[in-house]
Image (tube, rainbow over all chains, first blue to last red; front, side):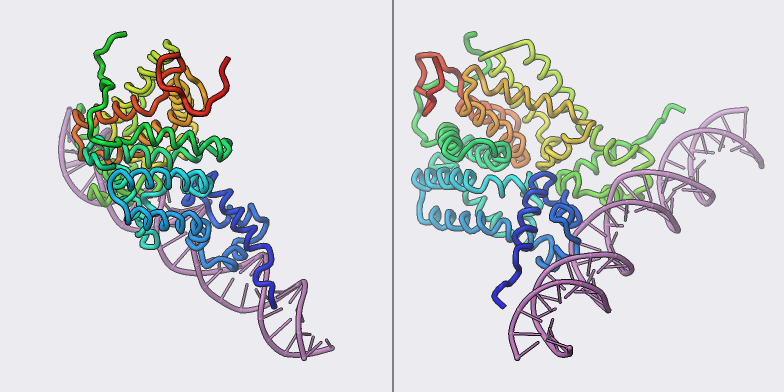
Length: 195
Length: 195
DNA sequence: CCTTTCTCTGACCGATCGGTCAGGATCTGA
DNA sequence: TCAGATCCTGACCGATCGGTCAGAGAAAGG
């Protein structure tokens, strides 16, 4: 009586991840997943309550890590919160880039679902933290570009090993975020400078 | 006999843009668009050959500008190509951020369609140009994050006026891109592949 | 007036979606 | 051997999708 759902459960999950990564969540039908596994669509729905449950189980890992990150950040402010948010998000993106990639830009609509409502709030707090102590509009734009860029771009980073991707993304984050208000010595770019 | 399609054509187009911006391309049905206009679904299909034609007409502007940018870049190399690519893409994003936003992360699937195949190629060349003369993996990661971040993030920039958004994005681009490998500037991190 | 052209509608089509259901295998434990 | 739980299937459901079609209604021109 120990064997709950022998091997098909995991197989279906893996197949769903593969399909989602290729055609996106909405673009993948239960039929597609069933075909990938080599079983019937009804079998998929025997192991999982529905398509949404499939996604929820796939995203359980990154979501729990994201929640932990949110709690860590909520205890901080200013530059400390900014640094932890950036590093934490990079770590999360590197570790779960496969899972994040399979959402393929469907964040807005998926986040609109009540099941993922808290993710929406967390990402907003993440943006706020990444905006940093400067707090200006430029800093907020930078934070948004960084967050969206990492989230959307990490689908293209599948072939880069973790130990190379992490420092690369950290370097980008360090460069892009407005770390403070003080005037940096470097001139800001504009169209009219020497060629 | 002059009046081709009086005003409904433009009305339908505007309504489609509004709906696409809210629920995405795939997430918007012709019924939704018809409801927004206040006509029947058949009327929408009377003015437009199909849903795809609707999108194509909406994206005609940004696509033509993107093609121009591609041609301009193809005549350049190295740092010059990088600068033109970054500035050109920022300009494009600022100017057409409404149109870009209504794709809502559906780039991958839409680009997979044969009708948008050349866009795929152009974006790859854009990445290559933005990677810059350094050419290392870190530079490529930075370029990807920037491109994806601007494309995905500009949907959140609707309330920022052009004259504020452009310099903000240019500043981000200048910071994030690995500008060069030459001697004077700051050392690139962990990058032992030059001779 | 009638005819033609343009604009638009409601009904309808086939396909596909997520999901349900009755029941057939297959296995387990007594 | 039989009973019951587990695993899975094919058939089916209602909803919705993009798209078609015959024809109604209005406008224009003779």
